[in-house]
Length: 395
Image 1: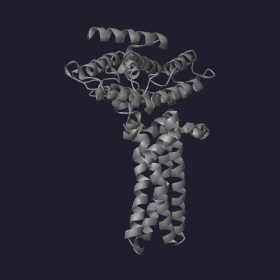
Image 2: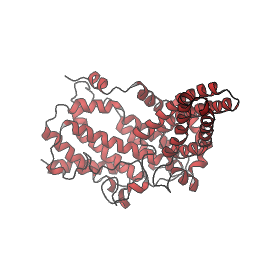
Image 3: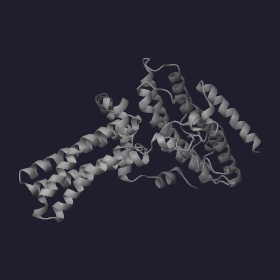
Image 4: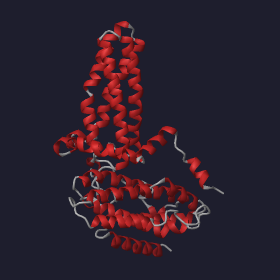
C-alpha cells in the first residue's frame, strides 16, 4: 500500500529548491517586501513600468538583461584564470562594464517584481539581497584591480560569482517554477484564444495564465481518449498552476486599484472548488491515510469567505488591499503539497473508466469557467449544478 510517506519521499525537493520554497513561505520577509515595494513603485508604473517590463520587445526584458553583467563577469574570471598578466586590463574593463549594466538590469527586475504575488516577492527580496551583495563584491574587485591588486581583484570576482550565482538560482526559480518574467500579453492573445479556450476578448487573463490548449485539460478530441489515475492528478495540478498564475498576474494591478481580472479569477475558482467538492472530496474521504478527507477542515469555506469579503469592497476602500492579501494567503495554503499527496493516494486505485469520466467532467466544466460572473456563492452553486448535470449526461 502506498502511504503518505512514500508520496512525500517521491516528491521531496533538492535542498536548494526546498530553500526557495521556504523563502516563499517566510513571513519574516514581509516588512522588507512592504518597504521595498514603496521605494521601487515608480519603476513599475505607467510608461516607465511598461518599458522596463519589455512591452515594446514582446518578451520580458529582465531575463535578457541579466545575461549581460553575468556574462561579462564570467568572462573576466576566465581571463583571470587563463589569460595571464597581459589579460588583466581586459578583465578589469569587463568587470567595470558589468557594473555599468547593473542599474538597468535591477530596474527591470523591480518592475517585474511588482506584478507578482506575495510568495514570489519574498523570494525576489532574497534574490535582490544576494545580487546587491554580489555587486558590492564586484565593485571591490574593480577597485582592487584599479589599484594594481589584481590577485585580490580576481579572488573577489570569484566570491561575487558565488553570490550572484545563488541569486541567479532564485531568479531561475521565479522564472522556471513560478513563471515570473516568462510570459507576455502579446502571446496570450496572438492567435485569438484565451486562457479558458474561448475567445481572447472574453477569457484572457493576461500573462502568467497558462493556456490549456493541447494539455490534458483540453485535448483535441477529449471524447475519444481514455485517461488514467495519473491524468486525474495532472488535471488537478494543472488547474492549481493556472490559479496560481492568475493570482500572480493580478497581484500587482489589484494593489494599484485595477480589479479588471478579478471576475475571471473568481469564476475559475468557483469551477475548481466545484470539482473538488463533487469529484475529489469523495475520493479523499476514502483515503486510508486521511479519515477526515482533505485534512483541511473549513478551508473551502475560509476561501469562500475571503472572496465574499473582497467582493464587498471597492478599490481604494480601506481594507481592499489587505483583504486581497488574505485571499492570496488562503489560495497559497490551498495549493499546498498536502493536497497533491492526498489526491495521488486517493486516485491510485481508480480504474481507467472512472478516471476518464472524471477528467472529461473536469474538461467540460473548465470550458465554462470564463462565463461565470457575480457573487462567488452564486457562481459556485452554478458550477456545482453544471458539474452534476455533466456527470449525469456521461453515465
